[in-house]
Every structure is written in structure tokens, then in C-alpha cells.
Length: 97
Image (cartoon, rainbow, N blue to C red; front, side, top):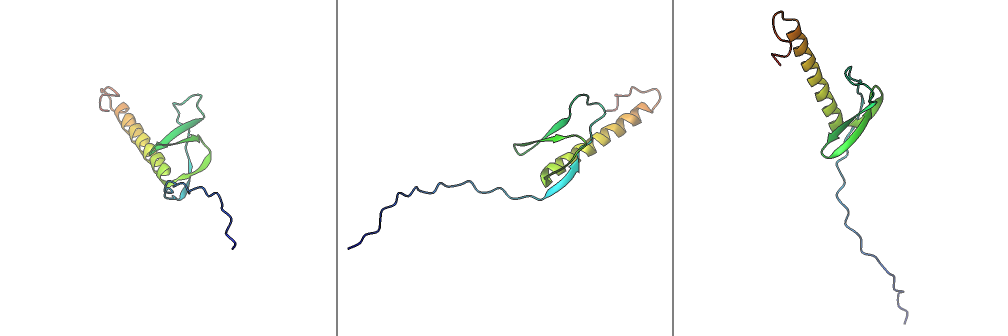
């Protein structure tokens, strides 16, 4: 009577569920005028950090591109408010911010 040879099988390890794949978006992060010496910035989303070089096109996940766009809009709003305050005669430039 023939028997099947015994094999040493290792139980499968449970793997963590795969993260939802996000689409990639091409972005360019311009270097701010007030930054001297740095060549990159860090963007963190949900515990994942991305080191992104200034002035270079790079593909990033959609949620990282959204953070970059929100930061750009905030910088533009701060610039607009600062310029509006500076152009008003007789008022401290930072009083309204």
C-alpha cells in the first residue's frame, strides 16, 4: 500500500488588507519665495509622508495632490490679505490678519 509523502507545510500568514489604490496626479510644487536653502517639502497624509522636491513634476496619489492644492489656496489667501492690509494707508499691515 502506497502512502503519500509527508510534506512540511507552513501555515499561511494572514496579510493585512491591501490599501485602496488611488489614482496618480501630476503636480509641481513651486518653491516659496521665503524659503532659502531647502530643495524639498514634506507632505503627510494619514501617517504616510511624502518628500517632494520643489519645481519638479512628480506623480502623487490624489489625496496628496488635494493637500498640496489646499496649501496653495491658503498661501494665496494669506498673500491677498497681506497685500490688501499693506495697501490701506494708516493701518498696521498685520493688524487685520
